[in-house]
Image 1 (cartoon, helix red, strand yellow):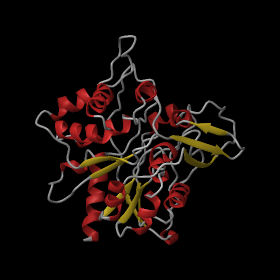
Image 2 (cartoon, one colour; image 1 turned 120 degrees about the vertical axis):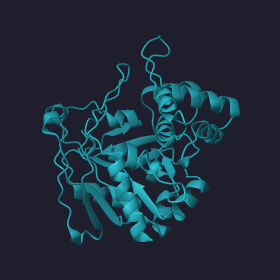
Image 3 (cartoon, one colour; image 1 turned 180 degrees about the vertical axis):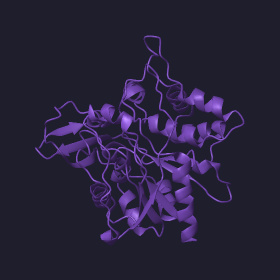
Image 4 (cartoon, helix red, strand yellow; image 1 turned 90 degrees about the horizontal axis):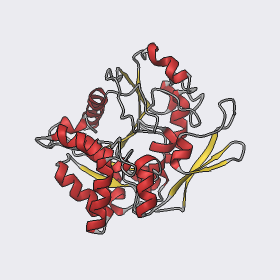
Length: 318
């Protein structure tokens, strides 16, 4: 999104649809205390799309994480701001819309559902884990052969009419990159989303992850990622985008210590989708706040490179 927003408004109109299953970190604490929808993914999307004269300062402020204070440590300013706006305006939808005006975002941000729900994972051995944060960082031992059999929402919730319209009227829909079972697929689980994806005339683009994720996609190849996302969409993506640049080997030991490895490209043209291979690797060194308790990726996609591919595919469609 941070790459796409740089293109002229007459060239591209962006809608970001974000999951409402997050329950970890600052978001989880606020969700438990206030009972509102989770705001973490909304905050990140708003920050990515912000386009103000002081956008760097505002973006930094919105992403600022307090690192001191018994009650504030670990919280994001943006999360607190969105919760306060929701309390004042009486609606998450209005709070997101107003925050978007303050940040002068390019496009709009839509929660995939307006109902509270939790992500649940069922594993191959019958184990059930509830909560996005617990699935994201499971506690079981690395030698375990547990594989996620399926994920679902509990309770079941429906998507909104705005989300359905956005999907059905889109020209191109991009899924990923992001943790497969805790970031990408949760958006597909709200009732009405997969149905809209099956009806839309838009080209569906899936961006394959750079690394596997322990407890979620251990041993997955690029084709496994595509097969899994296809199952939840109810159709095969039209295009699959994958990085073809060697990853920096100096950080491999850090990933290997977490039992995470580069995703093998085993995609074949006979898979029923077009394959787009390009240099999509970011050269930016990732830094995180000392108060941030969540693990973050070190190897990431470059937003400008990825957005150039998306624009190219969009123009090819036209």
